[in-house]
Length: 158
Length: 140
Image 1 (cartoon, rainbow over the protein chains, first blue to last red):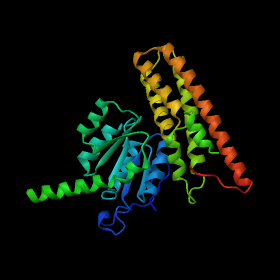
Image 2: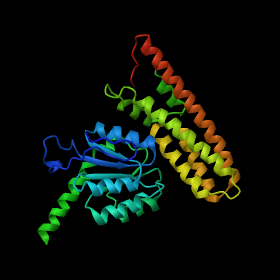
Image 3: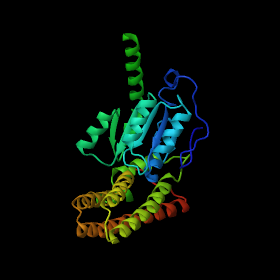
Image 4: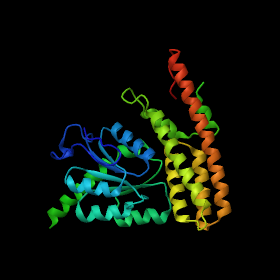
């Protein structure tokens, strides 16, 4: 229902209600995946669909940002590659952090400690190294639940 | 006889390729061929860009590094292990701004790429032949 063509446009966004209240949890998790590499993007999409997630793909960070802005509350989590020509994953992460309250997972073929550290300090909820296995993607729903739980706790405290 | 096992033995395709095969199902019966074709298309583009970039008077190593990085990512995602390995060495030469090393790596990566391409093409051809003859492809 929610698949997009390669340049990030999408048909309809599902913004109805909380995903985690539904019966088939974690199926239906609404994922936005961003990668300028078409091979990787195609593989991610297939893997995420196999996990029964609802996938929207973008090959540009700018497009991803406008999709997110246009469909507030339309997504549960964002997965983004780090090295992209127009805007890199770190910048995208900063925008998402300041404008929306979404967990962001960064992905890269780069595995140096420095860059992983950068990802974590910028606020990525996880940093995955390519090639990503489907088993890893099966668990990403935990980041969504964890963030929600943390937010709820903060609300109660204050 | 499992062709993929054979390829893995020689290090051409690693476990990631098996992941792709496992993703293929009745809804996407051509998934592996589609992804691999995309990889071929994109890699050829990257290799041409790399050759062009290394021909320049003032070599833009950042640009070369970006291309090699992408090739590293995509080759690892389809399991083309040997291509990925050369990319690692390639990036080191980029960092050192060593043009000789880069040119050598470009040659090597082109070679590894054409090897894995040939392997994959014959794999697909053989699978097609088996299917046409009415047989089925053994998984694993």
